[in-house]
Amino acid sequence: MHIAFLLPEYPHEKLPKSAGIGTSTKNLLKALIDKGLKVTVFTYFQDKQEVFQDGDITIHKIKLRKYPVLTWKLNEGIINKYINKVIKKDAIDVLEVVDWTGITANMNFSIPQVMRLHGSDTFFCHLEGRKIKEANFNREQKAFQKATKIVAVSQFVAEKTNSLFASNKEITVIPNGIYIDDFQPDISRKVDGMILYFGTLIRKKGILELAHIFNELIQKNKNCHLVLVGNDAIDATEQRSTWEIFQEELSAEAIKKVNYLGTVAYDRMKILINEASVCVFPSLAESFGMVTIEAMALEKPFVNTDYPWAKEIVKDGETGFLVDPKSHAEFAEKINLLLTDAELASKMAKNARQEAIKHFDITKIAEENIVVYNSLIQKND
Image (cartoon, rainbow, N blue to C red):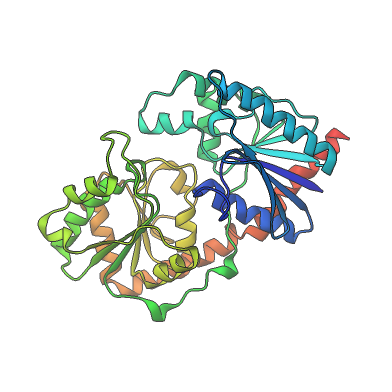
């Protein structure tokens, strides 16, 4: 079985910086390779045309061609033609695409097409209360309707996308996953009082809510400190550094206890998670939440947003706490409880790891995806 993926991003040194879609997809691709499948990746709008190997995965960089007018439309045709050529040459069975910006809206392929819902621009604009560009909405809706099969990373993004696109398509929910064996808890590294946020510093991840939460917390507990890890995004509202805005929201006392590390390598990130006493995820807009399952796998106590997608991952009071990030005092109270009640924190952390092993092991999740691919291949024969 040969599966190809059309992606806007992929984590590799020859490609631009990748975010959540790239990381979660690469986990799946590696697991599919381990199961004996052949995997090809197409990445579009790149700086040059190139084909290279990432282990057993073949990567095709498709160059962005710039024109005086109709750049998007003309590139659609170039991408479509190139992929169809490779499909025929390399005997690809299924093409998987993402929902973001509806890149495949005007493309046609001779093989079944799976669309994975990670969260479209339409989806995130709705959650954040922003106006969606009409062209983006139209492309995303058309691409969604054209896909042979829809898979979603959460029930929440499945139901919300169907609603936004006025559809009732059947959608299979398969969560993202991680290699559990790559996440080994190490209690000896724990730093007392260390609170960790990791993820992009961006308004939709609740980072500005976290500033107010930490202001509340530092009044309750003078022995804690906050570590932030992730890329600093330009804020969509104020058009300047989110880190700058974050600092302005902190009290004079709180700002002394915050350390921003910027971006770090993936292996270094696991060390930092092991060092944390408590992890915090105050996101306001997600389709899933990879950072949450990484903390769970490393047996960390955490306080998470209580928004719908999180309820599919976390059992409130058992594997973590779910709190509205806008309820700053309550969020701070739960963090402090985990900092001061070692027995409770340990119990919840152990429960969280067991939940991650049971539900988010990528080797098991890969098998669910293979069932979907097989069903499409059989129908296409």
